[in-house]
Every structure is written in structure tokens, then in C-alpha cells.
Length: 281
Ligand code: AMP
Ligand code: ZN
Ligand code: FE
Ligand code: FE
Image (tube, rainbow, N blue to C red; front, side, top):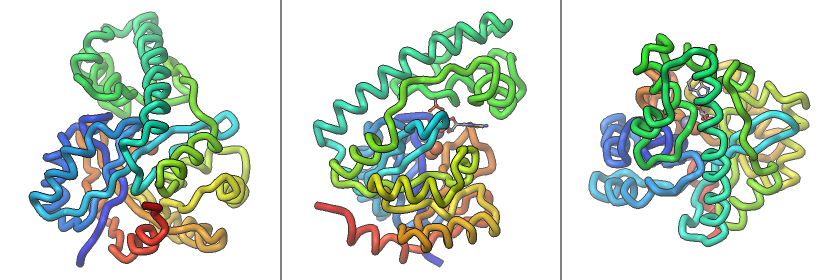
């Protein structure tokens, strides 16, 4: 059965596969269309698109942008974006700067807490990528400060853990507005995490829809059937598109595979057509 995957990361952000490796793996997994949605960067798109053309996988240009809803981080996916738009490039520079301000603070706090990790360890792991907490988690793991990436998040890096520092994030209006301005379709990523928000889920959806949100990622790598059904009907009730993706990262999310998630994910190519129809050229 043909399948698509509308959420994936490469070495341009916090994924462990290069754009080419990701696209080749997607091909092997029977994925016919793949959205590459790196955090706050479009740097992986040209290589992913070239490889997609070579092996015969349609690559949908995408991005994942974090915003702040009330006091909680919320992730938005943007699909069919125009990566060269100057408004995007200028906003991405601001988002990168907020990471560069936050990341050394996290490492400093880790050292105060007794960890051996240094900022150059993190930079060595990230290379040219947009540095994210998964890189810091990998550096902690290599230094023997933690036993796994999830240990790193639980003890230190999660937003309620001891070495967390927030960064300046755009508002939902700003992030959704930006994606719309650059021709994209804004979609709420992994809605299961939105259950941490203070407002009831339906109210969050209605508020975001008012701001221009167009879809919900009802099918997600780690959703169970009950969650999928719930988010699917929430999207239908609100007149929002249903989308789906694995959130493949490679090493930092072991056992999560592009296309199939933890084994049960299957996103139909039919979901892509209404999105394509809404994308502005
Ligand atoms: P950042 O972009 O630096 O704020 O880091 C956030 C990213 O960390 C998320 O997009 C996930 O990819 C990853 N992440 C968050 N929580 C966990 C966790 N518990 N285990 C593994 N990765 C996580
Ligand atoms: Zn990530
Ligand atoms: Fe995310
Ligand atoms: Fe993601």
C-alpha cells in the first residue's frame, strides 16, 4: 500500500541522517511523498529535492517552527512553503539567534549540575546544523553524563527539567502568519503534546484556526488508535485538514522509522491532494 510521510528531520537540524540518506530510506520504506520539515531551517531542502528527483520520491518543501501558546511551546509545520522568500529567511535568522543565546546557557547549567559536557562537544556533534536539545542530549550521552537520550531529556533538558532554559519564541499569530505569507499550509504538529496546554484542545484549535491554521497532524508516529481517532474528529469538527507524519529523527528517536513510525503509522497519499489544492503558488 502506498504511503506518505509529512514530518521528518535531517542533519540540517536535529536529525541524524543527511537529506540524501533520509530520502533513500523513505524510498525503501515505500514512501511516495515525503515532507522534509527541519526545525527553523530550510537548508536541507535543495539536497532532499535533488535526491527525491533521482530516486523517485516527491519531496514537499516544509519546515517546523516552534511558537509560544500562553506559556507552553507549540510546534507548527508549514507545507509547500517557498524557501527563498526573504520574509522567511529574515525570521529564521531571528529564531537561530534565539537558539544561539539559549544553548550555551543550557550547557553552563549542566556543568553547574556536575556534567562533563562542553559547548564544543555540542558544536562538534551538530556541525553546521541548527543546534537543538537533541544535540546536547547526544553530547551528554557521549560524555557518559546520561544513559540515553531520553534520560538526558528526563533529567535535564525537558521543559520542566533542571537545565532547561526557554528561548524567545514567536507567537502563534506570528508563526502561522509567516507560513501563510510564504505560500504555505500551517498545521499543528503532534497534537498529543498540545494536551499540555491550559486551554481545552478544541478551544486551542478554534483560536489557531482564527489565526490561519489549516490542519492538524492527527496521524502521528507516537499516537495510539484512540488518539488518532480523537484528533481526526477534532480536525473534522473544526473544518481543518487531517495530515500525518512520523517525526523521524534517526538516532535521537530509536525505533521510530520514516513512513511507518513505531510500526502502525500509515498515512494515505489521498491526504495530500486537498493540501496541494490549498497551497498558493
Ligand atoms: P529544541 O528545538 O532545541 O527546543 O529541541 C526540541 C526537540 O527535542 C524536539 O523537537 C524533539 O525533536 C526533541 N525532544 C523533545 N523531547 C524529547 C524527548 N523526551 N526525547 C527525545 N527527544 C525529545
Ligand atoms: Zn526535532
Ligand atoms: Fe516537534
Ligand atoms: Fe519534528
